[in-house]
Length: 318
Image 1 (tube, rainbow, N blue to C red):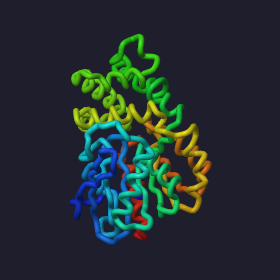
Image 2 (tube, rainbow, N blue to C red):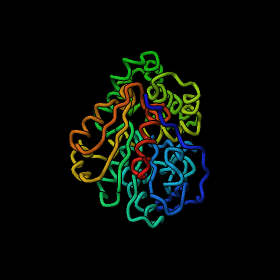
Image 3 (tube, one colour):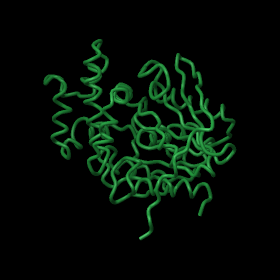
């Protein structure tokens, strides 16, 4: 059996800064790897998840010039957890501003989970700017996907955690958990907001790994991470991510001619493989790799292996 690839060694940015994108928002960005090498933009998950040092390590730093940034309202971007002027299409415009800042004509677009959603929205809006797409854990922003996580589906696999998530809101509001959590996350009382954010993020955290990962779950429920992720995710999901029904699949024809790889965990309980399969049907050229012993996170061995092999391939590395 071929040995699985692992992340590249840790690296530090060679440049970093902030970019004023208007509407009161300032984005933190960093560039890693080799200036002038193959350009790639990394789009983190959530929405609201922010970047981490390990995200830099999915690319050979000798072959890539890597742009990472914290999307509006999260990570080191400011204002923190702010929902004003924070939509999918604001983020698509931000990616273009960052591309222009870097001086690239086009670049590889790399994203997982919500990052895959944003990658598709960006590439379908600006197909001439995407040289390749490398995606993980496809999420299309469809009603069936929201229902899977927040009505019925994942609840059947994690019943004890579902009960804790559902029971955090008053019984008479449990028919619409997105709305109920939205009210709690926007409460004027800080303790109410933080408790709801931690409950929201814990539920997501238990669905993203094949095996329990207490360290990861602790990171998910850390107050700063939980507040940004929960507030921004809930804000996006309650607005259907500002997509028309079925928009990303409808417009997938615009991806024709863009080389792509999808790395999808077979047992992904957060973003089940059905979405990746549906995307493959309308974008037949994409290389869909379903990893038999993986769930959702990029750090799971089979997912890491597929992503690193994809970035190596597109950099021309044997």
